[in-house]
Length: 233
Image (tube, rainbow, N blue to C red; front, side, top):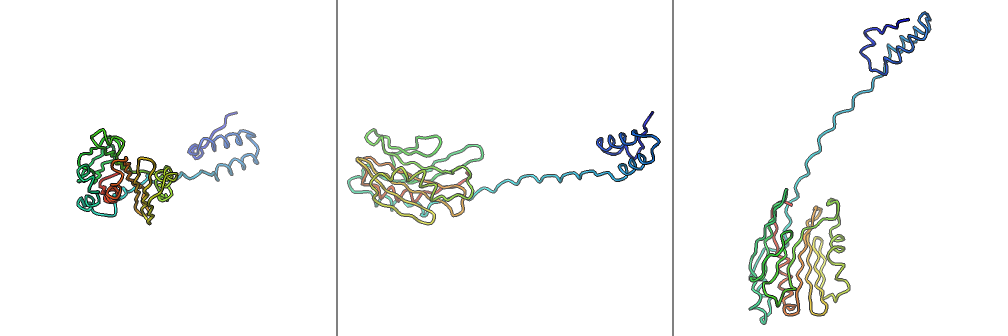
């Protein structure tokens, strides 16, 4: 016995052809079988093709985040104690960081004799050995997904929590900033974090001041608050 598949049925999917052939071949002279075959052939169910997926949109680059104040060397130098003015004279220092998709410039007020000593994030240190353990560090941070974060909480975990067992000398919390000054034997820390409300990144500035320059903490606080950052993250 030879089963002939009509031309109309050949245009259907392989799964439908198989069903038609099996029913048609079951009983060549059986009218019921013929009727069944026609029903299968005339009422095929062909799934619709899924719609083409839209290409993902490139996320917008967040606007640069700047600190609250315009850089002013005179106001910072005015806060340096008289006994330290020969050691600490602040001036503007521009530090560039470039990598694929990232081109950022940090404009910082730092002591004139200090220089950047890190290729990844700005780490400004004195040239002399007498202050070798002092530095000024600026970082831009995120925590896993950079969207929808509470930067006050994130910065607390990353930057402030470790200082909670020190002597807290000053703390200020703002809507988009957090300042903490703490000390322990022979060292004082000035930590300032800031961010844009609803932003996708935050920055922090940390000054570690050894005993000889501990009294200059107000000047470093002002320097941290005056940092300007421009470019793409």
